[in-house]
Each structure stands twice: as structure tokens, then as C-alpha cells.
Length: 164
Image (cartoon, rainbow, N blue to C red; front, side, top):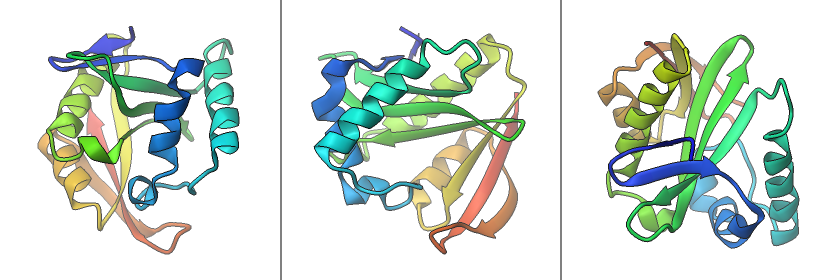
């Protein structure tokens, strides 16, 4: 386990996560506001393997973890800690069936506590302007707008940061 919240456990991905990982990464609604394309099962199997292998890299700066629900150990999404130039960026995705249940706010609060624990002093996050739910979550946990820009998909995007 990497960290936990009241209802969630964050852990390393495993090969047993393939079906749920594919469910997440092949849903166009999930990827609508993300920098990513819907992938086939074969592509997601390869991606999952690459992410798992990164755990063993000494100077890895690209960590993607599974999010499980505590009550039934069901994989419901992923959370990311990655380097964006010199900054520590966070991100999260949930399987569509788990939207609107407060998990986004809960995982963001958990990320902040975990980041403090591992010695981070600043985090950033990027949110497409149309993704109102994520905008509200980041602002609710204390992130502040840093700048607005147009991303590669020609969407208006906002960079947020929080000083811990």
C-alpha cells in the first residue's frame, strides 16, 4: 500500500489489474479531458506492463498507482505522481461507474497528505476548463490557478498549484 484514505487504498498496479485498467483506459468519456487516446486491450496490456516496470527504476519520476475501494477491494481508478519539468504533477482518473461519489475529492486530500509525508513542498495539476468537477475539486483542496493555455487537443486548460 502507498497510502489510504477513509474509503480508498492506493497501491502499485499489478498484471491482475488488466481488465479494470482496460475499462478505464478504453472509455472515451474518461479520456475526454485527458491527454490520451482510447486504446485496445493489447495496447493497454503493454501500457500496464510499462507502468509496472517503472516501479523498479531507481530514478523513476513517473508513478501511476491503482485506487481500490476499501469495502470490496475493487479497482476504481488510478492516481499519478509525475515530473513536469521540475514540478511534481498529480492526476487521477476514475472508471465512469465511480464518478459523482466523492472519490475525486477524497483522493486529492489523500494525495496532499501523502505528498507532505514524502517531503514534497509544491504540487501542480492541469485541468481542462470544461472539466468542471475536477476544477472544483482542486480549488476546494486549496490549489490556485497559475495560468491558462490551449493544450495539444486545442482545449482551454488551466495549470494549478498548491504550496504544501
